[in-house]
Image 1: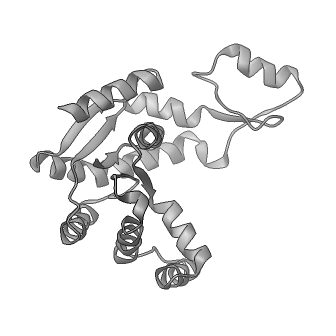
Image 2: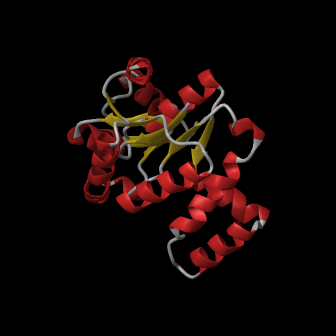
Length: 214
């Protein structure tokens, strides 16, 4: 099973990727994790990535693709992989296809977790962390009893600085402008599986697995 997950911030694609990984024995490839690991280990690609980051530059696609390629060489990736957070644009999608073709491991599917824009805004702007327990809550979706339990115990519901509506709204607009061409790319390739990301985690997972069986 070789899959790419597509979805806006707050769509829950990371959670669904972890569920698939646990059930099928595949590895989850997070480009952020791969970058941190390579930089910490001081690999040749990690050194190049660190130099770019220290200079305030974006890490180039060829470095990220090299890290993905290296990760897929490990024995635990033999059963397949779930790629989360990459590709983010059309150029990356094309480059990824070329790299996977070179190593003989083309994608089986691209899964789009689709969530209404207004719901995404509530999921992201409503996020709060209990100052006492560190538990992640949401003022729109968490049970009121859980929110009250934090404040009654003397805790505060803390919002991250970048979880305000203007910042989140801009992130979602950028995502849409960059990702729509990627969605069309995989649709034309016959790889796209569209799944509603609204509802409980288990409900969404059932839709994901059903879509992958098609």
